[in-house]
Image 1 (spheres, rainbow, N blue to C red):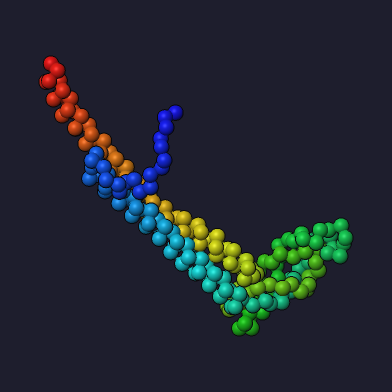
Image 2: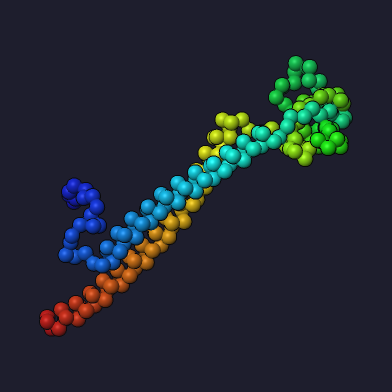
Length: 194
């Protein structure tokens, strides 16, 4: 393995008689692409994270806990039976009153063996539609951060890929230029040696 020497920082901007215009353009393209990638990723991630956290906070405020009643008995062992796991739940139909006073029905998770008329806590929105339990503030923060991170990475991929594509085109142009120069030099060299 050949000795490479110390790493030189900002080598793309150092003076060099062999450096071409395309090398300087590539250096600026890389700098711009990295800066844009960092900026777009950060802004998109933070914006999405704040939006998701705000939406989850709105759900916590608007969704209400309502007592519903089981409309029919749920088959299975009685919830008082010590042999049944406490966490096991099955889907069953429940009935509750909407804010406008109308009766609504829907499916909720109930312990097996519950008799008809068993009170069940469900969550509804302002219109009385059945919803899931809203997230806690800590759960909302984690969810918002994860979604924000994914959105930031996805948004940052666009300028990153654009920079890579532009750099690839610059590289191809430089190789074509080298080929042209070598062809010209080869013709000169053959004339002088022949």
